[in-house]
Amino acid sequence: MENFGRYNGSQNGASPENFKLKWHKFLIWFALWMGALGNAVNAVGLIGGTAYVDQSEQIYAAFERLRVIDLVWGIVLLGLSAYMIYVRFQLAGFRIDAPKKLSILYVANLVCSLGYLLAVSSVTHLSLRTIMSEITVTLIGSILMLFINQNYYNKRLELFVN
Image (cartoon, rainbow, N blue to C red):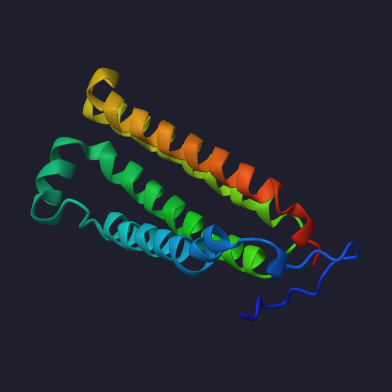
């Protein structure tokens, strides 16, 4: 059986071996790492001013305040990346409140993403109707992941005792 890190067991005898943890393993060994990496890569492009590849100069010339919004968003993405890695280690170590921290991550990502989309919309003068599909996908994806993870981890809370 695989070593589950710093898991020390609980008073009621709960053990990771008594639960199916495929989703948990997927999150801690792949999804959270890739999410953090993706956010970091996007952040570097936004902070470095290369997010729009060959068109960055023209776009920032047309929408001057967009550069500031992108810079702030890049910093936020770095913070979200760091928090993802923190949450990953909390989950891997079966730390108390780790599932709650995962929920906080999804809510923070949702709120920040919506804030960025609204800020971009206001600066570029795009109507909310124009960006509604992206807002809808962001909302549905985040809420769905929040629900799935809360449901999954609520059934396994007794493991998170460290």
